[in-house]
Image (cartoon, rainbow, N blue to C red; front, side):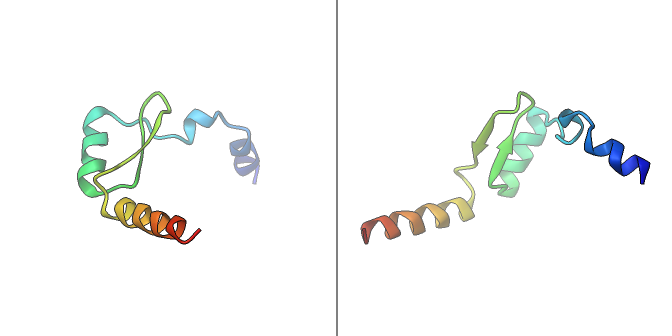
Length: 65
């Protein structure tokens, strides 16, 4: 129980996995939707089929507005 409580106050860096350039390239190739680099920058994988489907759905929804 003590370890759990202590982990709640741990550094946020411990929760983030540092991704190397190769990890990022692998994630893109595997179709991951969101990529977080070692600096904490977040980007959308525009090569992901799921991202394309989501984007098309949002565009179609806006067409009806």
